[in-house]
Figure (tube, rainbow, N blue to C red):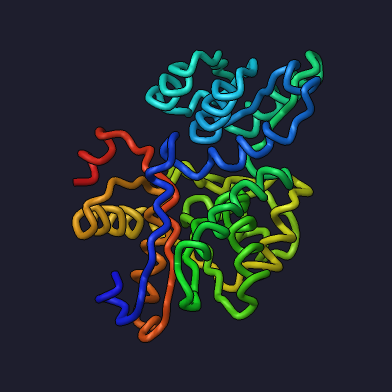
Length: 291
């Protein structure tokens, strides 16, 4: 990628994270912020997979009781991965919005702590540790541009917020699927809007309809300079190109910033860029279909 850009390209490999995605950072940071009394009550969330997996891993690590609600659209592989940590999984709702509604009601009735996937300052701060590590690991050279996937906005809010605080002139570029550009639709409208979400290869960071009042909306307006959307074909091509050229397994969400890099690499000559490779939780069946 550095050769292609004619500059210096760094990869932040969250695909090597314990649960296979960056989500562990935010979920664990939220759980670590709980009081001893809150920890005893246990934690609950709703997730299509990756956030639920992160909560399960973190709760197991901290010895906390936990429960994950998943919609009927969640893959069997991700449900089984969550259950391997000894966490109960409840399948309910047509989509993640319905699953989240049920999870919040369940938490309120039983005094459990609901851990949202992105609409929480401690979750956003946890994702921001990625940017802290980037600047620690990148060395003295200045970073000019950051490529980050953008779903509900938790990842790019945390990463963009920290990078902008340290490097005010850096360009933070968000990438979303055409089939689910929830946050981009809100940013363009200047308000919270509901969109129709179509299936996407980048399901792990699918924007869907952003929770009304989400803190990430204002964060994205402040910290994200440019946004791009990508078709399913572009996401698939970027994914296969990256696996072939860098021999690292990634998923559709991680392919988004790679696709963004491929679209803009000619603008990076002589500059330094970082691409956040956010995850690798894609089934082998999906990879076979793409190939």
